[in-house]
Amino acid sequence: MAVNARQRTLKAFEKIRAHAVSQWEALKQSQEPRILIGTATCGRAAGALDVVKAFQDELAQQDIKAKVTEVGCMGYCYAEPMVIIEKPGWPPICYGYVTPGIASRLVQDFIIGDDPCLEFILGALEENELVPTIFDHPRFKYETRILLKNCGFIDPEDINQSIANGGYSGLAKALGMKPQRVIDEVKKSALRGRGGAGFPTGEKWQICREVAGEPKYVICNADEGDPGAFMDRAILESDPQSVIEGMTIAAYAIGAAHGYVYVRTEYPLAVERAHTAINQAEGSGLLGDNILGSDFSFHIEVMRGSGAFVCGEETAMMRSIEGRRGMPHHRPPFPATHGLWGKPTVINNVKTFACVPQIIQRGNQWFASIGSDGSKGTAIFALAGKVLNTGLVEVPMGTTLRQLIFEVGGGIPKGKRFKAVQIGGPSGGCLPESLLDTPIDFTSLTEAGAMMGSGGMVVMDEDNCMVDAALYFLDFTCKESCGKCTMCRLGTKQMLDILEDITKGQGKIEEIDLLVELGQDMKKGSLCGLGRTAPNPILTTIRYFRDEYEAHILEKRCPALACEELIAYYILPEKCERSCDACVGSCSVEAIYTGKRRIKVIDQEKCVKCGTCLESCPPQYDAVIRLSPPSLVPPSKK
Image 1: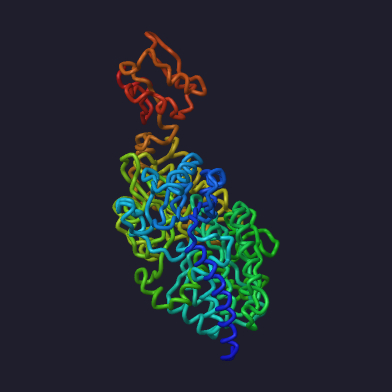
Image 2: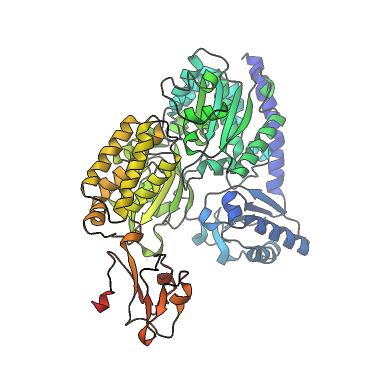
């Protein structure tokens, strides 16, 4: 691009940016309070839309002028619905667990008056003497927000708010650079793919740029199918422009004119906001024909997948976009040389593309200064399971599992003991307490038997059975296998059958080694990543929790008291309160009856082992017990 052409491009963007900044500054400097309400999927599930209506109704009733804005997800999903109130003279204050009733009170006491309602505060976003420092948000000091910096703070359906907060500055700068220099910047940043494999992003772009073949394509992999994972969804729902910008920079670097955002149809809000972002970018001259007055044109189409887990694999995804059944094929050739419709194609994850604009804008050295050797930048995880503060977390690569779970996540609830963390999605590994100081990076996790994956993380406590956990994840991958290759199709089913027998007390001791052998064969012989990684939960649980497998087989006992076939519920007669019928009323199958002296008894043949009787028994009596192996009579009668 000639010098004068570059100047025209920058001038065109500065005009767009100046307009966006003026709108943003007017909004921030307004004397009207701003009420930001998280209405991403997690917020909506918790009732955020009712909270929006409650604020609007109360403001109208009180005849108060305030701007109510629906924003995305801050990541603190455990505290949804979340609200941030920005009132002149006060720091922005974040409230959690907001209900319509609390919303009305916040209007009356804080918007109208000056009582910030400390009892509902989750954290103050800025230091201020008006709010005690005890309310500084506890997670801010642990996180480094790069990809999530705008999430929960801007309106995802207003492109001007994105531009005013740095959006499209990377694209404008990239269009003033030669395509090869853009690739060099990404290379020097050492950005690796955030979809799981961790392949160097710049190298992939370089291969695609150099290979012969036209047209070339860019695909954003937003087919997030891991149970408990919602990182990509949250970014598309909260800051979709960052992804569109990253894709456009990639297209400029490799010489592509068309791209796809492949997102599963189970994410309707993400699909809607991706469409809105694309339309607004085109309307602003930041996407489409002759972007920012340059000779570069790029168009993006949203492609909705039908929900097949295997379509997260890049070759299966391309077949799906082509209108064929989503099934993987052999590599090489790789998509970078023979991709969509046989043409060179760059496929990257949502998080990877969202990193690119900031790398271009802030420089490769800035990004490379964050993280650990071989793993630069930050990692986003979806904390789920037995952890106090569930939700999205963004930390520098190299942060340890212990820091992430106990400092950022708040530790294990109810005073329970940590047992394991399953990291890397359903095909990730289960790591024990002894490995809590393992750094979170591509190399360290792989050496421990797990993997970075796309960012799913499930925390388990002492009540989790590791054999049952391995069964749960393998059941998922077995059902999601496309069935194309024998090792995956039959291997997952055979391992699943063995695990089911073990959880029922019907396993054989030699089957433990057979599981290891089958798992290793699957890793070698499967066609795609699904089959190669599906054995990871089994191999790591055997590696770190072999004693639990042996207890199930040799002692017919589940140490965690979780496997239904190996437990039974009994009522201790010396503790049973005769006038109490709580357990009787809670049993849906009528397995509990009143025996002699009005002492309750559980009919073991009718009992479905749901545990409702244990939960319903008043704590002052504590008469219901759970045993493994199941006894014919409770201990007090032996």
